[in-house]
Image (cartoon, rainbow, N blue to C red; front, side, top):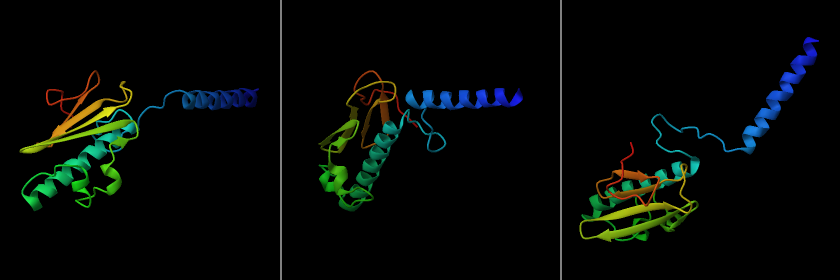
Length: 141
């Protein structure tokens, strides 16, 4: 009798696993303090950090910020492929101005797992889950 219930319990676990896999998976943070809500957000935030770092290096070397994403190629870990404005679930918007730049990543579909992000030359990343993020949106860690 015990074996019969143990087998039934095992099948229940298997079915629960399949049901969980069919539904939306819970995001697992990639490092302590990870502010991302999904893998897609994690990739978007990683991209933003790479651009911000490349801009700092570019400014240190050239005494000004880059005026386009292609200008950042081979600066830090910024690659030629990263100059593309299509980042999977996100679209990149880059605008230079006299003393800096504005970088925005807007999700192709905004929801709780796809917030919009914004940063400028100060390096602070802002996020918004209701509209396009801007410098007034809350900052993330």
